[in-house]
Length: 182
Ligand code: HEM
Ligand code: HEM
Image (cartoon, rainbow, N blue to C red; front, side, top):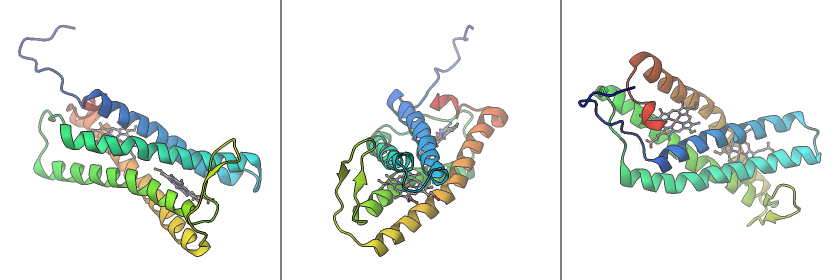
């Protein structure tokens, strides 16, 4: 396909930003799938322990990707949207992305905190090793776990909205929002 000389170059998020976004999306599927599936496995079984431990480390991987991603995002900013959206749309997208970034940091931290105060630590899958707990307070661990689970449930909806908005931009508004992330 040829482009006319007046066609502006496609401006996208930088490669590290795009790759961090899609790795995070894939890890989120696995993080949710691992914890949602553990209920189907027999209590006390090796399989159940393994998927729960995989949940911990998939979540930690999300955090490890997100921290440098945020630093880079603050440095680089975002590419322009063509045609530019109105002020209300910009504001709601900004709020949505901020909420997602906060979630990607706070949710793993709450999970880590749950385990670090549980007395059992963060078990490493397929080994008998664990990052040790700093204390054993079952009530506190359960309280943090409750918040972690509630946030996890709420963000099913938030992530669903995010994906719906991206698809709407791509299929209906036909702007470059999606192309910027591909
Ligand atoms: C973005 C990352 C994460 C997401 C989206 C997430 C999501 C969830 C969700 C939805 C549940 C509730 C599942 C249910 O209702 O049965 C859950 C449970 C849990 N998560 Fe996470 N989590 C993340 C990271 C972590 C991390 C990093 C850890 C620990 C290192 C962790 C530890 C736990 C624990 C201990 C539970 C309770 C499991 C149980 O019922 O035995 N999570 N998580
Ligand atoms: C099929 C799934 C997904 C699609 C199609 C998608 C699409 C997009 C698109 C097109 C953007 C650019 C929006 C803009 O700049 O205005 C974006 C940004 C973003 N997405 Fe997703 N996304 C998906 C899944 C996820 C998931 C699972 C998460 C995390 C839970 C996530 C977190 C984010 C964040 C934090 C941004 C803001 C990026 C920034 O400002 O640097 N996305 N997404």
